Image 1: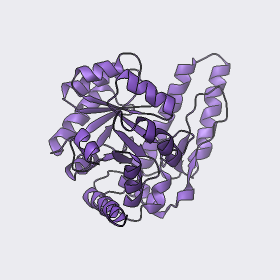
Image 2: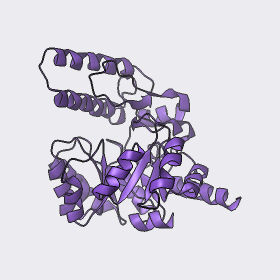
Image 3: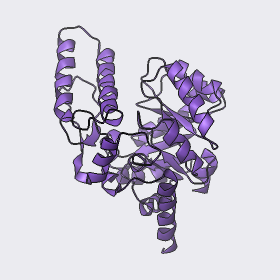
Image 4: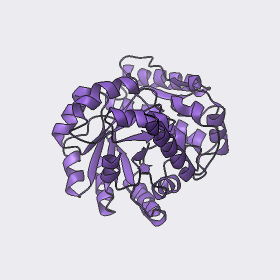
Length: 326
């Protein structure tokens, strides 16, 4: 973990998953100030909004933090420039392979580039492209997910690429014992999202937090793709009425494709905007029936609301205890 902490500039190599509407200045600064590494979720923000959010986080954070950008964002290059303007030290790119020039533009500002690698071939390609670190995230995670479990990805990828760049493991991690196991396998740290939703500093609505505390692992289910033409990445969230709403949205977008009203890229963007709106309804407005309650399968290990510093201290203590028994 010393290698991961040195890379991030933190006390412990616990990277916070970027959760839209949740990972904003208050939670991000709290995680960083507690020794972890907070990450702003840019999501669908405009460059102006990101500018304000980074400035707000800098006012609260005494330690380093990063920014997560979505590769399909139509203003990605402008967002990268906003990060550069503020001297953000780490930019995390999520949502697919970065477009040409994105990695170079980030590195030109002096920032480190972190990318998600859902398969070994993609990990190798990203390393050749010059990324500084990788996150391998399994299907147990909340939000957008791939098809392979965390444990399988870790076994497949850590022995091959773990000595080339720092690799963080994510997806379904809720306790320190799991952190210890992945460190032993060659990871330099971990990324957790679900575990931080119920931090005191999280601005998530009380209803949203209650849903997490009441849920078990089996309540966090993946969305279903109803039309093979639609490039729909599955999303893991707690079961509620929004599951049916997403099915209806897919039918609507598929109808627009049939009519030739939209191009495929626009169709995908509409799906992404749907999720952003559905998530906001749940996180900010507290509509946990019709909004999207994105959660990983580790949600069953979220049992109470507590400060971010206590969550990190507990995880570290559990990991240290697990390693001490080896």
